[in-house]
Image 1: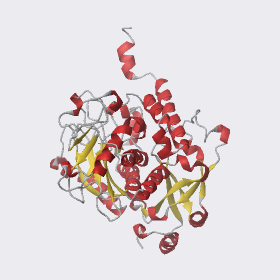
Image 2: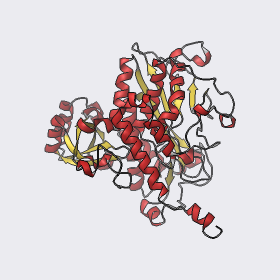
Image 3: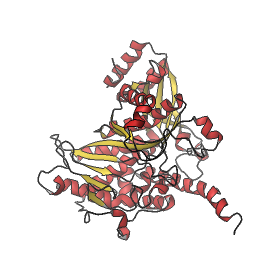
Image 4: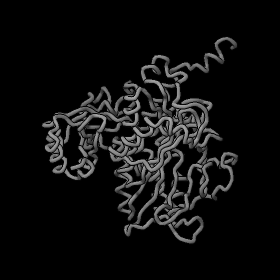
Length: 455
């Protein structure tokens, strides 16, 4: 049996027996989109399939530097950092070709901390979509930097002046992807073996800049694939003595790195709910309302798609990233790009998320906002047909300029609490406030160069 054929606990047990595995690797996505995990003995794993297992809840109580939050209520010293209850997901099983016959299985939080689990947040949005008569479909696109030097070498120089895999601006270069075949073919083969298929992979504009477009699938599968792609692409690169960076903006002189998401909805009959032949842009009323919802709620849900201090370095005019919640038909200067197509390909591209975003939360934010628009029959404002960066957006469509302000907007959003739950909204907003506070404690190189002598 192949891992991606596994659908049930019985299937997974049979696979473990068939391979004679002594250990299995399990993983869990934390609030920042980082994959946490460990090896489990065969007996422990088989027991956990039936009854779940405990994972220290500190993974929801610390930041990406393992510094403990001091402002959260559901995790912390006052709670004693007990265990979060984890449910293993048999259908998430996939190969780990970088580790021989090893398999990888994802988990999801249940019980007391279920409301904080990013995968659970998306699952609940998907379940609500299905009750509305829709099957959400999604495809992620990631722009990322590849360095031709190791993580250790970069750490030694504090990640300053990384050596990219290739020099200069060379978008869509056949020369470069032919010269660097070891990296390209290695990543394509890995994605094929791990059942996280790539439908397009090319050089982007800028040194070491690449883009991978993942194949569209049902929303939960698409997000699982995206989370595994970000994690194991890094693993493969480091095994080659290289490194991949998914920061939203790694250098002020180059465009930021997006994590765009293509979203569509299928009706119960399997047809595309966004497609209406002969209408403007082949857009159905459902699609217009979906766009209207994203437009209305984007400022409120923003920090779920732009979750770091660095996210806001990317969101500046003229660098292929949105600065307001505008939309247009096949227009890449706006946040919401309606893409005309066929019954198969009609979709919305949600262009706010950066490569640094948690795929579950970024997709949940766009999908929930769109479904809110359908529920409330929200018509979008006039489409942008020119350069959206040159337009003065009305105040209610302007995006926040700081992570702190975006966190306050989420915390005060009634739709966010309705779609994602109070536990998640309060906890996630607090973690973003923490991130802003941590940043404010530090003195940057820019400040030293600008002020040290002259002020």
